[in-house]
Amino acid sequence: MDIGIDLGTANVLIAVGNKGVVLNEPSVVAFNKKTNEVIAVGNDAYKMIGRTPDHITVVRPLSDGVISDHKMTEKMIMAFIEKVTGKQLFMPNIIMCIPSSITDVESRAVVEAAKIAGARQVYLIEEPVAALMGAGVDISSPNGNMVVDIGGGTTDIAVISMNGVVVKLSMKMAGEKMDKAIVKYVGNRYRVLIGEKTAETAKMAAADVFSPDGSRKVLIKGRHLVRGLPEKIEVNDYDIYEAIIDCVREIIDGAKNVFERTPPELAGDIYRNGIYLTGGGALLYGLDRLMTSELGVKCNIAEDPMSCVAKGTKYAFRNIDKLLDGFEHVSMYK
Image (cartoon, rainbow, N blue to C red):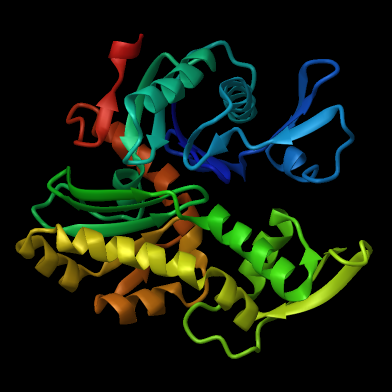
């Protein structure tokens, strides 16, 4: 069995063989410090965020696209693999998706986590390469394609042609930074402290980064910073726009930076083909129109953008004999 894992800061997606994506759950682990046991992962652990007693800690073992808690990451990967395969006694081949700017030390941590989880062979593929393949783009032709993959911890921007990464940029500016910006904005303006989970819900429900007009509204609950009592307030798309627009402009500036380093022939291809937006951040309302107006190039949201990277691993397994640039068999770590 071949398994592709998009090990994201916010979500883990797993694609199995020809079945496509079979698991999509938050990258969260709940751990009991008294018994030293993992009590929940994924959706079950996500429901516990901000709601646990002292002896249970809920952690996100990945930060900014890389492993920050090695032990918890191993436990999480093992639990997810067991969910999709059952308790079968076999060792799968695993492709792990990684940010394009990951260091050797960080990639070694990903590989070791996969090996301990039971992988027979481990391959690494850079997220923008997988994202473009998952979006249905033929990356083997001598034709430039650009992808902006906005995840939870990192945004990966790359220009790809003939199975190779020509120009790339990985930024630690993505969904989680936007959530933190919303928490800060609501605290400053309304004097209400909300959690990042609430901020994410507000972003998904009320964001409009292109033309906010106050029509998109959402009720959020938190604690008043002065009175210290529970509080319910209504925020609209203007509020979310003010909170996250600087984060969005940083991503657009990153795309401009990649364009400046792109060979002119490929830039012409991208102008004709458009830019592909993938990852959960691509669903931010109005982002495609804002980027189109700022960059002067048509931006297309890929079909099912959150699953593109995981879907791309399915196509990557077919190219194992070719081993793409940005796609590596890590036998050296065995």
